[in-house]
Image (tube, rainbow, N blue to C red):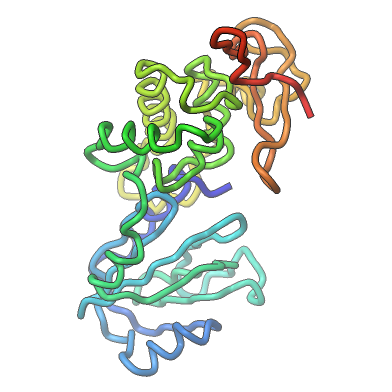
Length: 288
């Protein structure tokens, strides 16, 4: 699923292929984008850069025009050579940007908007610091976490207003990495535990955006890993491992839904125990 690492790699690939290139044609099935293209014209604009911010991708065109996209669960950007067969059916395409050397295709992108620099700032103003920002504002993230005192830790990590870029996989993996039960309330965390969550979120995502391809255009860099182990069976600590033995202690990994209509959260009941304050249980490790 697209999380900060996936979006970062996609933006890096788009930037490597398109930055400095002139748009030869722009196609879209999305009426709002088509209207902007009709009024302002994308052809002959230069693609200046492509950046990621949390789970958002920002493509900057000359003339202060920016294309903002969000993949949600099913969207993706592909890069092709002109004339190269697409790997997905044309009915799934939403945007096609052609340059002399490459064709960028957005498939099943559910959110796509054109912005000026001013409207883009307003659109993203509430986002928390990006987990992959060049300089991570740890103080701001800790303050954002503290503001979610009544939230469960797993839910707070998914809140893009706290820390932009964490999704369902990293939510579970980060909590495990810090020995924190994801169903604890944020108010029960120590400063050291909160700092660990921020640092581990950064570490795990950074590990999954390494680039050793030189000047090649890379669209896939393998399966996501958090354990540092080579085996595909051992690449993640807890995510999608319900009933399997914990890599650390051997206990069976548990899972249950977190938040209304949310996907499953995974954790080890031994490595991430319940925490009690006096006689009050502030986290529950029961399965659902």
